[in-house]
Length: 82
Image (tube, rainbow, N blue to C red; front, side, top):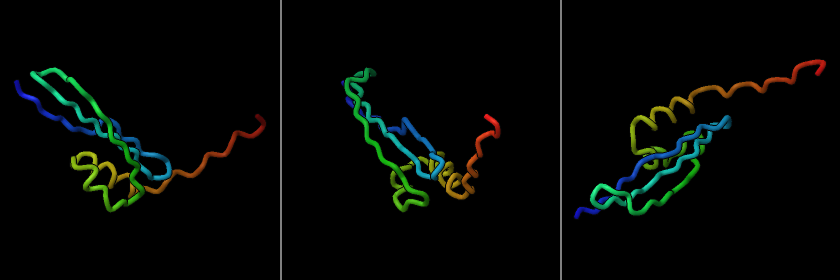
């Protein structure tokens, strides 16, 4: 009868402003079955100093770093005559 906690990033949303919404899920697993789940959420500002702590997976940290080095897109003007 092993009880373990599995923590993973279950949501990662890059906004137009450069902020990144992160949700981590913690599953408590007993004998291969999830018996409880909890969530933790935060928003990272561009170049947030906490990013490496929150995004403790290199994959997500690389995406955040890339997103924060890009120029935000210019607003698209509405079509004329409509």
